[in-house]
Image (cartoon, rainbow, N blue to C red):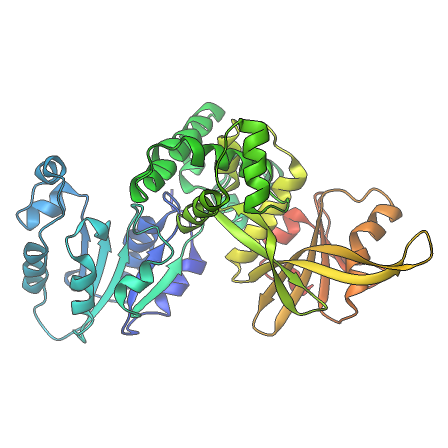
Length: 431
């Protein structure tokens, strides 16, 4: 089964021959290798590139390592990297003329001195370089610095709902329920039973993602950072900061952990792309508020698995999915704060804050978005839209609801749209 990932494929296509190393990053198991070695490779073939001008090499493949005189078992036993001289000699033997060659490398972190090797290849005008990797170092968000400013990052997320539904065998309503529960890691699409999906997600979370972080940062074990992940999973869509989380540790886990350690753990989780931070933005003051902030999971299925599929609050799940969809579409996403002075019950004026779930920015375009699971009355609608009323600006304002609803305008001109309709149409914000 081939899952189309046209958005990311097009990002690779427009970067061809740009003189930079194309670095495909993203959470483990999100489809980076498939994008490069299947989808992009097939694009090159369809464009008429000869197969002998596409050099694919996977550093975790025994067959590929045999080509350069290396042995996968020996490398594993000896706990060493692939000899860069052997690899470079092999690549040199494959380049026969001055025509363009495409170098597609998978698990490149297993190559010794891979940063120096790849930077050296940038000096070759007929070599276009693309790499992926999936250990803790390569998953780090700062990997581009390893290439001295000559890297071009393509960040791949788990499947969006529009990608997921094209691979799902069933109707769109059932697909949405599945997506809310199990998320968008591509492997989920090939699994039949709920048991398979649950075990897969729980295993990935414990034995892959957390293990990577423990290894990279030389932690003694995954106990404390795992418990922090539990707390964050329980509190998606709520405002948090390190002091508050430290207090939660003490009251819920009966464990003392410093604020600095909490901050470091959050940074580790972000660098591994497990979670993402949405900062608060003061709409009227036009400035960022550093704390508190909101944290969302890169994949909602992993979040649910971390909680053993308990605490599946649809309101919070929907908010997380909307956040990820906006990022998938290329927006920078903040949490909006609108501060106004209003009369209180005593008749005096007092400062009051209203929250807008998301401010989505791309260039000069800005959208205010509220995630409202249900709007059952006019009063509820007024409650959800009141922050919009207070902005006193002309940016587009949108309310997304859980029930299926074609886009329509409220009396105030605000767009109201169902979550399914929003997710399935990439231009849904433009209705």
